[in-house]
Image (cartoon, rainbow, N blue to C red; front, side, top):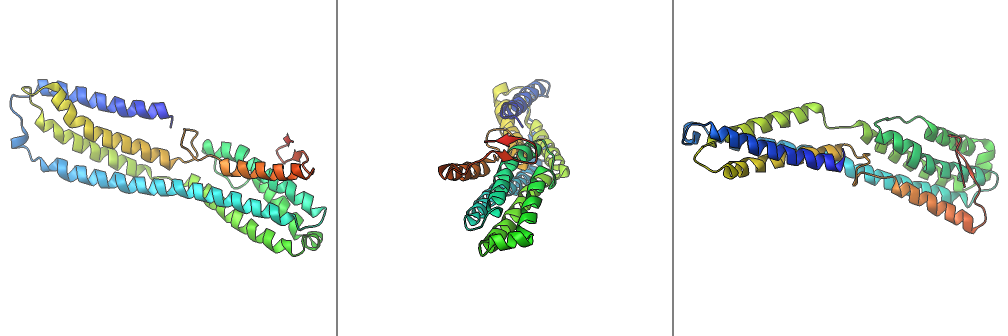
Length: 273
C-alpha cells in the first residue's frame, strides 16, 4: 500500500471519528450517560482487539523478516555456487557461470516484478535456468568436468532452492481476511462504547481527544499489519532484491577483473553485458 495513502487513511479515520463524536455530543441529552451504561464494554473489547492486533502483527512481521532471511540465504548460496565453478573444467565452468548470473538477474527483475504484482509461481524463466544448471551438472560430462567441486555446487544448490521455495511461499501466505474483519468489528464496538460519554456541556475538543486515540491504534495497527503482510510491495520499506543484485554485481566484477565477463544470454531473450 502506498505510504501517503496509508497516512491519509489513518488521519482521515481520526478526523472523521473526532467530528462524528463532537456532532453526536451536541445532540445528546445533557449529562453523560456513562453512569447508566456499563462502561466495562470498552475495557473488555478494547483489550481483546488490542491482543488480536498484536498477535496478527507478530505473525505478519515474522513472515516479513523470514522473507528477508531467506533472500539473504538464497543470495549467499548462489555466491557459493559461483565460487565452486572456479574449480571446474571447461566448458561446464562457463556454462554454470552463465546460469548462475542469469538466475540472479531473473530473480531480481522478472520474478520480483511478478511477486510485487501478486503473481506467485515456481515456474517461469527462473525455473528454466535451474533446469539448465541441473542438466549440465548431472550429465556424465558434467560430473567429469565438475570433479570434487561438484559436491559443493550441488550442496549450495539444494540450500539455495530451499530458500527460494520458502521465499516464494511467503507471497502465498497472508493474514486470513476473517481476522481483519474481526478486528474491524471489535474496533467498532470498542469505539462505539465511547459515545456513552457524549455530553453537550463538555467541549468538542475533549470528545475528540477521547476517541482519536483508539482510532489511531486500530487504524495504524491495521495499516502496519497489512504492510508486513505484503512484503514484496514497492512501498519504501518493502523487501527488495538487493542481496541478489549485490551478488550479481560481485560475480560480474570478479569475472571482469579476470577478463572473463561475457554478455548474458538468459532465457527471457534479454542480453546483458
